[in-house]
Image 1: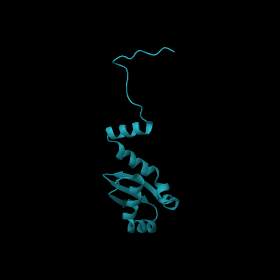
Image 2: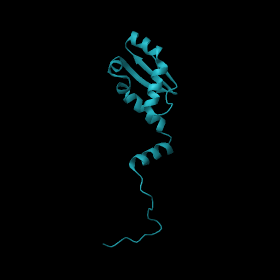
Image 3: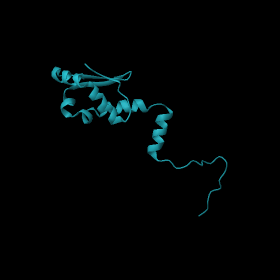
Image 4: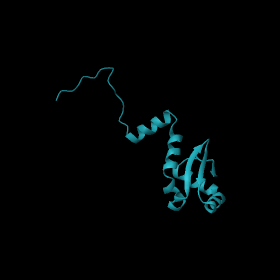
Length: 105
C-alpha cells in the first residue's frame, strides 16, 4: 500500500472524541447555557416526575429565571414553598448554576 506524501497543507490535527469536539464547539460559540436550558425544558418530566409534569402547562427560561405555568393551584402553592429546592435539583441535574430563580405561574 502506497502512503500519501504529507504536504504543508494536510491536516495534522490530533484525534478528538465526538463528545469533546461538540463540547469545545459549544464553549467556543458560548451555546452551552442555551443547550442546558433546552435540556431542562425537554427533561422536565424526568427531573420533576410524572405527577408534576401532568399538571405543567408550560416551561421556559428568560434571563436566568425558569418560568413554570401550572394548571393546579395546590401544586403551585406546594412548589412555591419549595422553589429553592426545585432550583437546586435542576442545577444539580445540569451541573452548573443555571437557574437563579423559579417562578410558578
